[in-house]
Length: 277
Length: 304
Image (cartoon, rainbow over all chains, first blue to last red; front, side, top):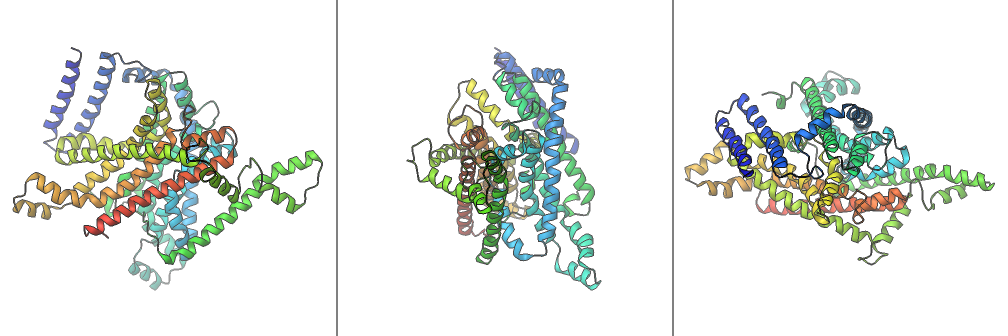
């Protein structure tokens, strides 16, 4: 009997979405996505309650929300430790280092031809694996997490930035030359702005990598705070609602981080065709 | 993330030509040299401490040879890693628990199983999305948003929860790998199935092609370049997912478990050799997909 309302909610949400999707406006598109998300959460809640699924396997959304509310203090310290100190610092250092390296090797085609294939190769490797080594070197606190993040984000950004510095065409460079622009001026006024869409592509890809690096590195040793630490200890105590609360925070932080970078991209590269609607 | 990778300004190219060989080798040589110097510097502190304690005066050549032959160095020298790698690959019977081939196989099997599941599900859902507007509007925003969520970071937790529910072995790891390879394939495949422009679909319609004919003869073939681009991202992601999924302390087999036990017991050479096996595995998998891609696209006349 308990299956009937579940199927009812499912079919109801589905039918509503099919009907709404016919209009195809900005508003209904958002509505459809929101209804889909809400239906999933409602189904999750109902299934967990109806079939009495143990909290250890899957807590209900309401339990997770309650845990978020009850543990705001813990969640905030973990957020500061992992996201702000570990991921954000590492990401900024890694991005700065990659951009500077890209500009440095920009004048040497030899170095580029040597570094780029290696950079591409390294970008596809399971770099999280260096986490245990860096934790050994830099200690348990956030510095080691930032180091992991630096290594993880360096190569994707480098590869994109080098490609970006090449994105000007001969006509534009000739124009700069005909104005007798020195290297610095043509870099600053032409090639850096032209590289921005590529750079931001790299920056956006690496936001998720930064969070992953910072959290995974904590599994190899951390002080008694941090999201990775909390996840592994809460799993040990079978406090699954807290684990899911951390996941919610990580998901929100990831989306926010990406959204912020995308927003800055919009401001900086407003001239690029991909930003025009 | 994948969406961004597949979009226009992208720098991913996997082409190697003979003209690049010399620069690459130079850079590699520089890396190895820097590595040796770093190994000497980082391992020297411990050797000096030992010497002071023993009351011995260390000469420089002595110090250098000692830093490069430590049992548990802070940073093992390249030849030590190579020796560890050789010992793990060729020095053991393949079935031994100390054999890196065996651990690599454990990881590889879960990776491939997950990759197959994830790719299949991704392609199927993409077909559904392309054919149903309501599915498109419901699922796609979430699929794209999910790319910004650090799913990988919660992989070990999923493993622990599943093992408490009685699911162990290859399956939990494969589920993580599938989950990670699912989204790149979904996003790439939706984009690919949508590439035929109005002119081409109009032409199909003027031949009164049925829906399925349009799918098999126009949409599917023109989506293949996108599919392969996503497959390369997906198989690398699947491998990373499997390795991270092997991190919880319960696991005793696989490259991830090898990394973790190495870090517990300070066996740096073991960590580095496991890392190199993982790197070789990743490179080989991506290379295999690339070869299949080039063959297929060349035969279909789509090679760029």
